Length: 309
Image (cartoon, rainbow, N blue to C red; front, side, top):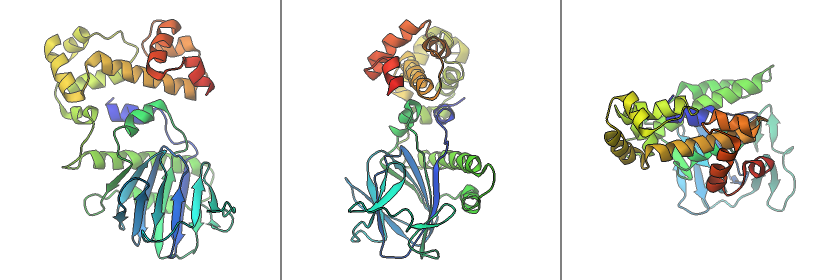
């Protein structure tokens, strides 16, 4: 298992917020829903993405956008258009003064906007949950990542466009899985750009030494790994692995392992009712006390406090 697969294999979309937005100008929507990741696909017309701290950026049909939460931003037909709608946590929408607008903007099954046949059409999918494993991925992304349509195109966008308006049994699960696939495809396209500043764990995927070492760690977090053991598995000396791993990833092998173990532990605490002892064994700690000590050092709270939050 590679690092990207592992990061996306824990907190997957469950009941993600999905819609087809159809709008006629002038329009401007203020997004402050605190979603950890939102994907936007421009289908028709152009739009402007306006972060609170940054320059407006124009997107065109075919472009894919990843928004990294929880910071707010605005999407509009023009940077000069003042926000008219605010999207709050839970995808509740109001006017700027708080007047509810959910019914007024409802255009049907997962359809939303001010005009059924608006000149601007976007497909939007927002992950509703935040998990520690996802946070390691989010830290590698800018607030707004744009993959241009003239450099990359996925057939998944067309499939999502066909499925998003259907109202059939199991449709939420179908859309969740499509969103997961589209996120992975978009992330690969983003990190693979010639000018991309991809994280070390992504660049290391193609390294003949570090790549296999990273996959071994992600494949079996519960194994009592040592640098010597890992070096033996990939066929190099301990010193060679430590040096090459640190250069590629940005931290030593055991430090990297501790990070992914504690991130996985946090995700398990949040998403399952497993006992602390069971979580400890699953992520490679000998007992609950050892996990608690390391977890509090990393997160500033005990596992029990983290789960309660």
